[in-house]
Amino acid sequence: MTAPLPDAIDTRLDRMLAGMVWELQRSRRSRVTDGATATVLRDAAGFVFLHEGRVSVRTTTGCWTTVVAGDLVLVPRPGDLTVRGEDGADLTAVVFAGAPARPRDDGTLPPALVARAFGPAEPGMATLVRGMECGWSTVGGRVRSGDTVICSRIATTIAVTAVRMWVEQQPAGTDRWLASALDPRIARALHAIHTDPARPWTVADMAREATMSRAVFAARFAEVVGRTPADYLAATRVDAGRALLADGSATVAEVAHRVGYRSELGFARAFRRESGMSPSRWRSSVRSSPAS
Image (cartoon, rainbow, N blue to C red; front, top):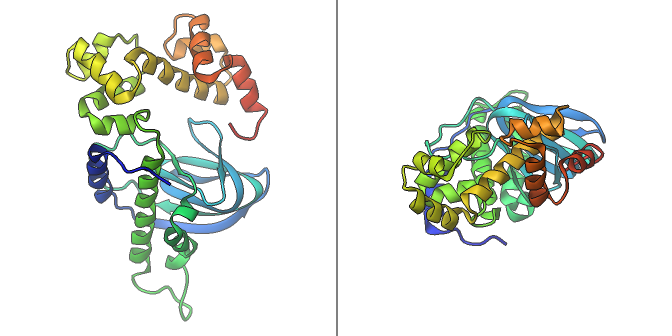
């Protein structure tokens, strides 16, 4: 069950979804052998719907995330998505041709988003996914005229429904897309922080990005985001650190400096506050587990 969206988010979501139109390039339903990996999207937008089993998914810069039957993973802008099969995975992968036409204010959508329990919540959409090879099916031994157009519209409908569900599933006040929907000025500061988390940010610097006074910015930021600017910056740096720890061979000290900390100790303290464990222990747990 999802909660109603605040009016400010609801209005912006309508505007954003209205501008999203994808062209379908290809789709395919397949099984992924347990333990096998495959890059189902390569520098492309698209989505993956899991019919059966379980997979782990990962973008180029992200960590492995578990996806179970009924979930849908959408990559809204061109990027890479790798899947690793578990428990008899059966999925449909849909690849879009290029990026959608989109309004200028949806840039805070993540590289990939997971709509949990998409199939059970949207059974009509799940049925459409199962027929997503319609553009390549034949009637009387040939592809029917208009199949590509029809399938592109079906795929767009599925994708925008997944975006809506993902937004509805976010904890209110904690996601930066939702926060930016409530205040475009705060959105500018959030975008700047995520673009360059290693910058030696001060609250005054963030306020300048938002074109607000320091005091007004600090109060408004806490109201909209639910955290102080300093706490949010720390959490963003820790998120960046997680990606570096999981996907690279850099030492903890090197990661600390790359995400904006002057010392390994400062990074470790922030990491423990956000993750409940040290960076070294977290890296070990991720590398020894099939999914984070």
